[in-house]
Image 1 (spheres, rainbow, N blue to C red):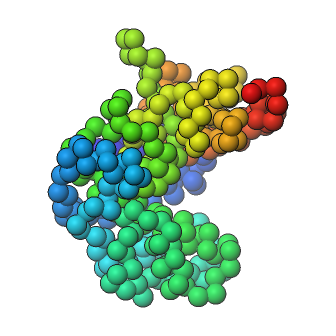
Image 2 (spheres, one colour; image 1 turned 180 degrees about the vertical axis):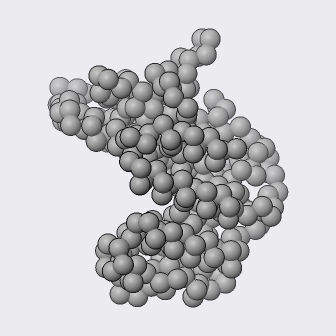
Amino acid sequence: MSLVRDLEALGQYQELLGDSQCHFLAKLWTLQDEMAPTDFRWEPLSKHEIYRLTRANTPLLSKAKDKIDLIAFVEAFNNILALYTEEIFSSELSAKLQALDSLGEHDLDQALFDDVKILERVFSKQAFLDDDAKSCLTLVVYSTLRVFRAAYASQIKEIDFGEYDFPDTHTCPVCGAEASLSIINRPIAFNGGLRNHYCSSCDTQWHYTRIKCAFCGESGQERLRYFYTPDDEAHRVHACKSCKGIMAAINLKFFTLKFSPRVEELVSLLKAREIFQDASIDKFLSDSSIK
């Protein structure tokens, strides 16, 4: 169902993203959905244990007994690499990247929750790559990890990550990746609109305090600010004067289209470029009169 939602939302931005990019993303997301495993076993944890792990920044998937199947991962990687090669990568770049048939049995032990480890393993199997090739290889690896992380994360259902009292964390409580989008929900009754963080790596959302920096925890209203263009109040950039941290955000109160966090993560990055053209962000971050 989420794939249908994502593709419908993607179609709304065909003019902004372009026909070729929308076409590629539709093919990639469909391929990822087709390769998603269905045999993941998750043994439910108590709410107390989940809170303890989250406060310690320990991803829940680190407690999974099942790991990513090596054969399934290599097949998914090779299929996704073939799609990038067909649609995006140049022939020169493609020649530098190899099918990932040399991973060992234990190379994927931490792949569900540790980006650094899996990238180290993959790079060790691909010799003599320049920086551009490494960047492209990283993109393929992340696209492959999404296949498994999203499928496994969907099985963790014993807690509502949108709960107001859930511990604040900038990293995903499920897979450990950094949040890629901040979502301000529509106001309900006396609720001014709760804020969620979104992880594009495993498609998880979780609650985060509305007035608080995602990076340093600053909660002083005078040191936090949203910036947006006059013609688009929905897509925003959240800036913190204390740590100079900035994060893409979307306020659903002003959003009238079909909503998909997966799509809006991409759109928000493009919208942020427009917002950054306004010098007011730099002025806010550098203004010494704001204590």
